[in-house]
Image (cartoon, rainbow, N blue to C red; front, top):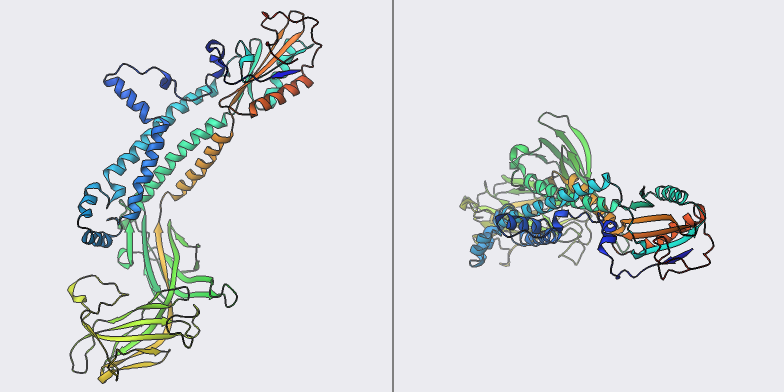
Length: 568
């Protein structure tokens, strides 16, 4: 048996290889036609071809990714109006420009929507004709063998005593066994394999469309809100119950899933020794919940990354902290405030800070109505000599540090305030006996007496709070399925080789059968010659064993003769 692989750069006659190379590409045939004479129809066809080309699709995908960057860097009016207003106040020159460019509402702007729609059209316009042509290829048969197989990139030939019909039958059986689509065409067997390459290519593009639709649907109909709940407190899924709420463009309050839940207990455990001391081991919230207005109470435990799911709405546990229980009395001993006040953690050891505000009911020693505020710092584990931060996140030795103030909190002005911050503009600090700002450390059960009979504040106990994120993200399953399909499709289009094999068996002038085998891949690949050699070896051993070389060289004009330059 002899083998030869010709130089792939060698010129191939168009008439000889036209059928061999046809249909290996699923690019629509109309794209290969000449550009029509320019006119309205000509320009329309040219624009359509450009829009549905892979180059333009990738460019639009890049523009979509770049266009999403301002949406993550610039405050968006649909999610946080307060930050947008603050940006306008601080950037008087940039704000009008951003308004004209739609950068405060990127995802619903005209230019972003145009890129999104053009990308849809481009992908669909690319997929539909390729799909129809691919279906046509599946319904057809591999083309017949070229006249000169020795011109193909991978080629081999040998002589055998077997009859041509026997060789073709053996070749047909072998190729079908190797999962080629094969048939006898004239004096040769034509076979093709690797259709999954184009299936993967089409699957990748279809998956992109599914992902784009899923992301768009998710953005339009999503909702996301947060709620901080102290142990013993509850939540009902209505708009007024949220601490903050971010709906999608087409999401309405009527779309809120009816349910409610109560936080019975929060449990947190931590590593007590070693290099990971203080690292959380367990964060879980014990809840009772009910679905609908009159649903039965059920118990469940929500953990980090293990949310409660109710009819497509998920409740995630996202944060944890402490809420000291505070009781404030006026100078006559009347209770004017008694509640658990959540404080925000500052570090991994849950050193916390916040403000306790008393808005109504308090009168000073002179009988004048005032408002009180206490700047609070909380250390769940106080260590002697370290009054700045907690040494461990669990409640081992809790200490509450308070700084009392009195005056006007400014809430009557109607301006929104951060409940965790204190505006001291109209507030005065209580002074101690030395004339300095009053400040005391309190342990559970201890009381701070305000000067001049102004009242007292008692640190009663400590509760824990948990923050829950309530989300509804429709079409997320479709987005995940599209992502997986895109990866699989891309892998198939990259690693599966589309190739064709021809086996010609004709009787030579001396009565001995000459067998020629050739292979052609859609793209250059070392696997085509290797696979052809394996097929030829198997066929040589099983169906077409070699015959002695002729005594004289064959007539070079005989089309059944081996190619000139072939190894012998």
